[in-house]
Each structure stands twice: as structure tokens, then as C-alpha cells.
Length: 314
Image (tube, rainbow, N blue to C red; front, side, top):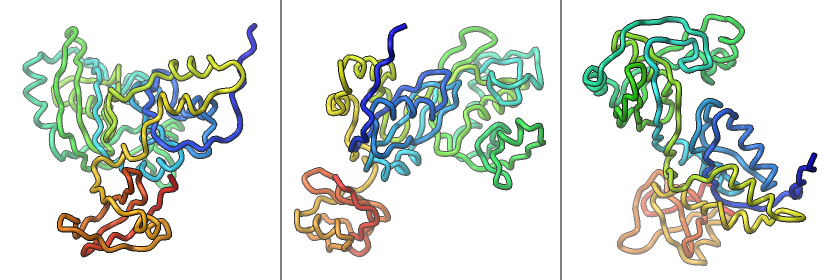
């Protein structure tokens, strides 16, 4: 049996975003573990967990990019998902046991007629098998232990919900653009109930998270293949050049304040600066200062005064 290549183990200074196409069948943490073994970064995290039975966009933050994770997680998400009619499960996907069945199969026009009810700010009861905490315990742990889990409805934002395809009478494919905290599995469950039948998610793929979309996706096998091409140790610089996006890409939605070299030095010491110029913003809750297009700090602007809150070391 061929000996598995040993990747470079020293911790590497890497700053930026890797937009991973998480494969079906592994957890987000397992995918992150594979990335860590290859890149061996000093610091790494991801922005938004995907279930093992879901695939698609998992943004991975290295180094200073971890300071921008909240801006990615708070951004809109786009999911494409398949709902199979006729059965509702305990988990609202294929993992759980069937808890209800129906012989009713909704038609195209019936489905389209109710989609508008699920767009806007709506109330949603999360799945019992979810990461929401109840008395300090994750709901999915309580549910797996056989305890009765009661979760309260909470407001979510669904910006768009489209019927993409109906491959046959048992299945329908949707695309949803939604805000933070939305459970697609619950959308499938609620759609089924609204249509007088039962439904659960049988396929789920995330296509967008905040500023990152399908064009940014990197296949995990492609990373592994490139890493294995190096004969002795992994060329981290080559991997970073090929796959890692700049830290600033996560802050496209924020106001950018270009500053001079002297002001950048003051900001890096935690000092506030006065913004000058006719077009300088006066008040902004969240902005980032940059010098020569390199982020210097995240902060706020009050009466033309930029106050840093998190400084970048780039």
C-alpha cells in the first residue's frame, strides 16, 4: 500500500479567504480539518456551517481574515434544494425517521401560488434537529436523546424563493435567497404543510454566502491534488496564490476609507483620526480604513472621526 504523503507541519502565516466547495457526506469541521492539514495555518475558521448532507459554498478564513467572519456570516445566502413530497421526517431531511406521510402531490401552479407567502420577513420554527441552544444544550443533542424539543418561531428574512424545476410528481427543486438564521429544511417542511401534503429536503447545495459566489468555489480534490504534486513538502505560497482570496474581499459591503501612510500608522496604534476631504463620510457604524488598497482596520465613523476597533496586521 502506497505511503500517504506527509504534509508540511510548521504553522504558516496565511491571510485571506478560501471559498471551499464542501463535498456531500462530510461535516464542515471535517472539511476544515482537511484544509488545516494541507495549509497548516496559524489561525483558521469558517463562516457558516453546512450539514453533512449538504454541499457547496463554505468560506474558510485564514489569519487576519478571521476578523471579517461576521460580515460574511451576516450576508445573504443562496441555496438550491430539492424537496420530495409525501413524507415528513424528524430532521426535515433524509437523515431522520418518517413521522408523517401523504398521498397528495402538489402541481406546478399550486406550488407557485403559495411561494409569495414565504417571501419577506416571516416566522419560522427551526427544525428540532438544529444547533439552537435550549437551556445551554444543543437542540439536536436533546432530540437524539429522545427528549421532547419545543422551539419557538422566530423571524427570518427570505428575499427570494423560486420554483426551478419539477423533475417528476414527487419532487420539486427550489432556489432560495435568505438571511442569517434561515433553515431551508424548515422551509421544505412548511411548504409541504401549506400545500396540504408532507415534504422534506433530499438535496441541498449552497451557492452564495455574503460576497462569495459560485465563481469563487474551489474543489477540495483540486487542492489535495495540487498539494500532492509537491515531492518533498507543500509549497504554501503556490497554494495561496492559486486558491486564497484577499482579506478585503469579505468587506465589499462596507464603506472604505482610504488613508495616508501617517494616518495608517496612527490607526494601527489604536488612535482615532479625523477624515479630511469633501467626500469623506461623516457617520457610519461600520467601515474599514485602507492604505494602498490594503485594509488597515475596521472601525466606526462619528462626526468625521474614524475610530478603529479591530486592527489588521497585513
